[in-house]
Length: 161
Image (cartoon, rainbow, N blue to C red):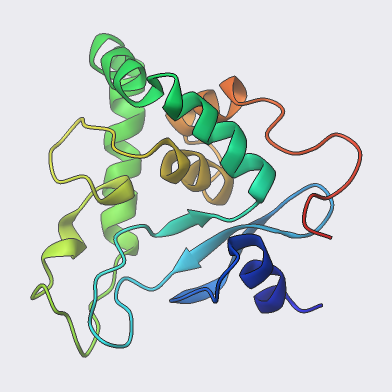
């Protein structure tokens, strides 16, 4: 099965706006995709890196369901190193975003942070931070969220294959 078919199977629907596989699970299947900033119809896609591995998505969803977004945002506000990590990754996110021939929002989403956040220092989606960390190694905040979701990937076999 090719990557696009695997990604579609992971999502349970046809994927939109995929540029490439940005990170793979330990078993070789796509885990993170890089997305176009805008879909063909001009709709913004504010998440540059999208977590596709079903196991990882479930693990991070459990963190979010337990209040993880608010907790990690508080931790980031209280910890200068985490705040700096978020600021650096946000700048990188903005540098990765590219204009498109059609932009329904006039290009406004090009200035958004990870997961489509509009305000500095805010966290909206832990999945987006984990995806960013997998695609851009060295992102401390995303790495720490991923470590909390451990095991991010199944230990014995791919959940997609």
